[in-house]
Length: 193
Ligand SMILES: Nc1ncnc2c1ncn2[C@@H]1O[C@H](COP(=O)(O)OP(=O)(O)O)[C@@H](O)[C@H]1O
Ligand SMILES: [Mg+2]
Image (cartoon, rainbow, N blue to C red; front, side, top):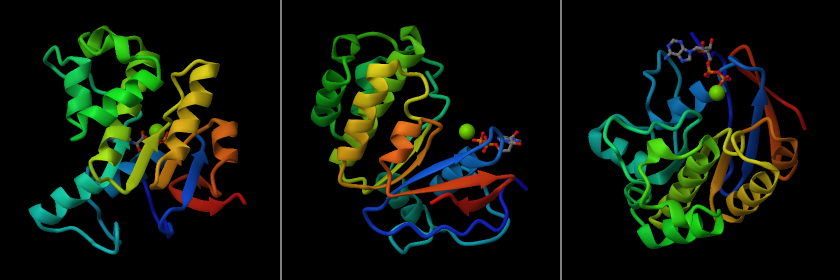
């Protein structure tokens, strides 16, 4: 079991940084919230709702903007602009791509982008998801592949979003700007401050 006795209540609008050693279960927690892992026990609610039906699952997916730790490039030559459009709000996602300095790369296949460029495209996609109605941001090491300027720009953008946010990060500057920091250790959470 990757997670056990995890209790975390996130208030609406609260921004939480989730830190902790490699392999401690941070990504597993985010993925569990998204429903990508089957739960053996416990309850996970978003907006007060659990999900069991396909309709509830679809609502949860729309509600959560996700920045994955290992962005998939897909089996097909997916273009960056198609990835941005999949957010549901192309205009907002394209504007965020411009802000993050990847607006000129939208006609490139995502598997031709550098790690940092791809991470910026995924960040811009998440901003588009928020434009399309997502109220929760689940970002998994969203600045890990970015250069120093990019880390600051991405933090500014993420923290400007009108969402409840759970950010997995080892970026002290980003963690320091969140409302709360919690640390994952061997599948369990503890408060840092
Ligand atoms: N798909 C998987 N199958 C089996 N074990 C996994 C899988 N994904 C992650 N794990 C294991 O679960 C634990 C937690 O992983 P993860 O949540 O990715 O850690 P973190 O994000 O904190 O670095 C690790 O021991 C990892 O090896
Ligand atoms: Mg991880």
